[in-house]
Image (cartoon, rainbow, N blue to C red; front, side, top):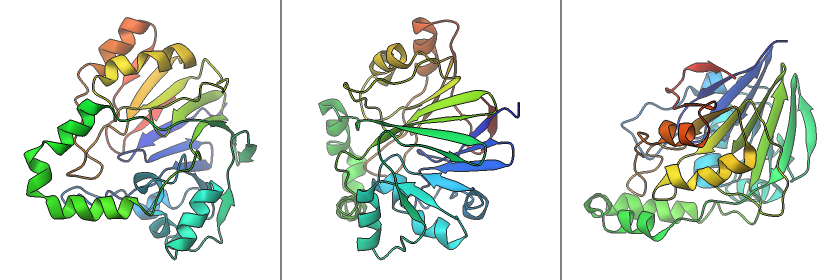
Length: 261
C-alpha cells in the first residue's frame, strides 16, 4: 500500500497524494487579503486533476490561474462550467461533475455525493454587519459582495470521497448535509469546514454522528475574504471531537504541511 497524504493551503484548498497521483481540491488564492502569502500556484497546478466541491468564489473563482500554470483537468458542476464561461475562463479542460459519479484519477477512486451549503446563522451575520472592521473597509466589502454574484450555486454542492493506498478521505466543501443522501461511514479522515455558524464545536456533532470517522481535520477556518470573514478560534475543536469519541483523532493543520491519512 502506498498510503495517502493530505496538505492544507488555506480556506478549502487541499492537496491529496497517493503514490504518484495528486489531486487538488477547491483552489483559491485568497486574493482579497494581500497581507497573506498566496498558495504556491505552480506546485499545486502540477496536480493530476482538481475537484471542485461547489463553484462559490472561494472555491472556484481563481481556477484560471491554475489552468494557466498547466493544471490538466478540472471536475466541476455544469453550473460551475457555465459560470467560468461567463467570466471568460477557458472551459476546455473542465469535465462535468454530478452527485453519484464514480471515477478514477490515477491511484485515486473518487465518489461524489449530494451535499448542502452551511446556512449562516443570525449571530454570524450580525458579527459581520456590526463589526467596525466591516465599515473601515466598506469599499472592499462592497466589491467582494459584487464579485460573489458571479459565483452562485444551484444545488450543485458535493461531498467527496477519495480512496487510495488503502485509505479513505471524506470531505465537505461547506458544513452542510443532504438529509436524503446515505453517506459512507468510517473514513480514515473526515475534513470538516469549520466556518459559517456560531458555536461550530457544537454544530459539528451531528456530522460526526453521521460520518463516524476515525480522524477529523478542520479547514476553512481562516479569514478567507476580509472584511466579510474572520479567523475562527480553534480552541474548542479538538475537545469537542474528543467529547464525541476519545478514540477519534482531531487536528488543525498547519499551512502547507503534509499529514499522513
